[in-house]
Image 1 (cartoon, rainbow, N blue to C red):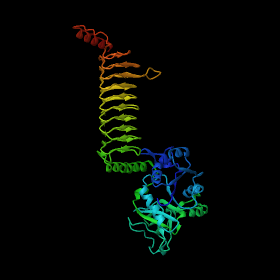
Image 2 (image 1 turned 120 degrees about the horizontal axis):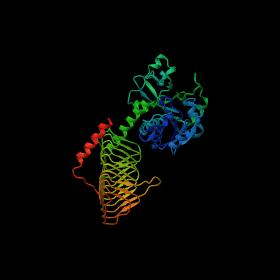
Image 3 (image 1 turned 135 degrees about the horizontal axis):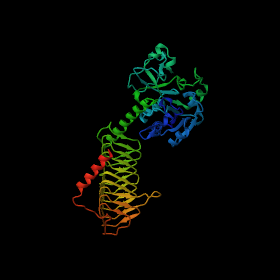
Image 4 (image 1 turned 180 degrees about the vertical axis):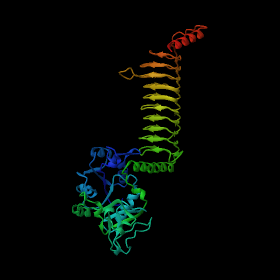
Length: 477
């Protein structure tokens, strides 16, 4: 930006229509609180952001690092909220003001308003848009002396500098105060303004309350020569006042994020069929399956299959998380594969070419290069050596009721199906553990361990046993 910009975000309200004890601006939207989307757009412009708070202010402050804060002591309207920040404003220069419940605002739209203000000659700039039904919006009312008889500029017109060249004025008339002629105006207030700081210092103390609630209206500051920036898409300024609007905003942001990543080289099975949160990093040639959810700080260069849920996980190029798997705090190196229906919990690391298959759970464990556990296995607090083979039904018994213990399996070891490894225990490199064993002591390198009970076979007894069971069942009836 060519001039320093101060921005004030109004975020003091509770938002009763959300029907939630959580303050409206803190409701999550794709990995960020709602108000954070507005703040990020402003910080992208290099703005010094001041946030006006009240409800759950400690949580709002914690959610917005890098901001300054002002407290509105009572809910007395938008004008009073801006007045609460007056002591933090600069002596001169532009001050952009917007609401904290408009998460669809973009840096590009805000930049346009700011640049129009810089090019205009008045102390006030307001962004406007057209709607077919203006009910509920403040109307942009232009003084007929400007020569336009109150008509707005055409949609998608460049910024119009009303008053700078024709001597006309602009004011905003709220729905409840509109005359029939004003109520018919379809150019409405967006709630985004830029003021000269000196104008705010003079005008804010002079605001007067409106009946019946005694509230002070920010729109009362828009009176006299002003710049109106028109032609915006109305969707940019959509306020979130209830859960339905929150869901609508989530859908718009999801499409916006996914499309940006697709243009950067990421392959989506369906742009509308995946959720990618704001903190996720994707790389060219990564692929995202239908219904996948990528959350937190995940970093994805490989393939995420359909209906996976991935949180705070790194998936390297060439790695694959197959369908219906859940990964949280995990790392998959190049060539690693997990799933389908795998669960990778925090601390799970699959080294290059390692594989865990369907219904395998890995927690705080490293599966070394080329090792595999193909199905129905739990590996918790373990180190699985390179090339080891873990049979179906194997579990590491890592918890004794008081603490966690570690299992170490050496390179090239073979663990037979349905084995229980009671930690702490080590199975040496190249060792073989027979299926169905319960291992409670260390197994040396290249040894064979087997702990089955002797098998007992009684020839010809099966039919006698079935007859006995039938008789017992009849007697029970």
